[in-house]
Amino acid sequence: MDSVPPDTQPRLSICIPTHDGRAFVLDRALRGVVEQLTGDTQRRVQVCISDNGSRDGTQEVIERHRPALAGRLVEHRYEDNLGFTTNLLKVVELASGDFCWLLGSDDEIADGAIAAVLEILDRNPDLCGITLNRLNVNDLQPQIVWGDDPRVLPPAGTALMTSAEQIFAELAMLQDYISTQIVYRDAWLAATRELGPAGIAAAGIFPHIAILGAMIKRTPRWWWHGEQLIIHRLGVEALDAPYGRDLVDYTLKVTAERSRIWGDMFGKRSPVYKTAMRRIWRVQVHALAVAHLKLQAGQSLRSDLRLLTGLVRFYWILPEFWLRSFPVLLAPHQAIRLAGQVVLRVRRIRAALAG
Image 1 (cartoon, one colour):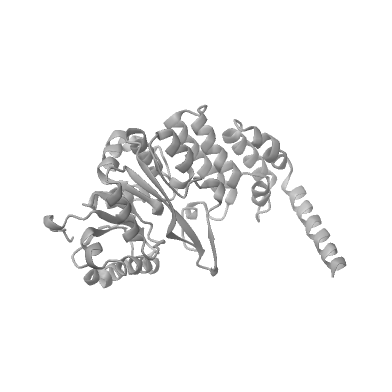
Image 2: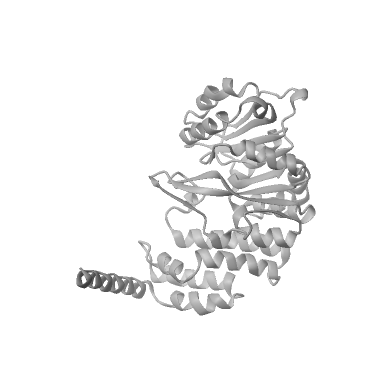
């Protein structure tokens, strides 16, 4: 393991947890980092990698980039995959920078992003953390590029937030994505101690949400940066891998985890909790989204019932859920499919008549 000399203490550690099957995307992520490490930036930045038992050439990728990192690389390898939580905690533990950028190995840092983040930290030295905006790119169709739905983004392009309620209400849905999170390392470590292993384990697939929440409640000084400094890569193995292609199971699992973590933070009847759940509803559980779930291959009446009972459990507090989503949930998937076919047929007839 490389070490950083004490006279060149990094300001920012780019912390990359990775696992088997990610060697080719890790190579791309590291290239994007290395290309930005020049001059003073190289002195101020460290790269940390924790490998969860990869057997796909990950070590060769790391060695290929080691010379360019000029002693600024710290790495650790588990012989077996111990899970995302263990790997994430380890990579932050490896870091010695004041701040840690939690970068997923399948994502990239946009050109100029490291310098931009260092400038934010220089201007705001007492921040507890930063949440960045992202650009989405489909690896299977690279010509498809888009930003996140404006309904989940804060109204201000850039803003300092100084209350836990504001941070949680405006950024909660964005903070389940690790690559756009930069954290003050001491605050992260204090939050992990406060939560303890049981509290972190209770967060399930989103341990970082619980840790970020504990940080924010203790030190509510968070920066939202609206510039898209992260390139989020789709089309590679991601969070939904354990749930296969069953989008109903995936939707219910993710909603359950978010609801539990946010409810524990502020209470499930609090205005802040309702605001966060409303943001998810607007993007993921509105009427058309529910119809899309019901149109998935393999959908059954049993899946219809599971979706109905599951979503009612989490969204019953929202009047708009009952007004707009619930009627679609009541309809069996066969009716949704038939309605979709009718709509398509009508559109074709109209197009033919117009032509």
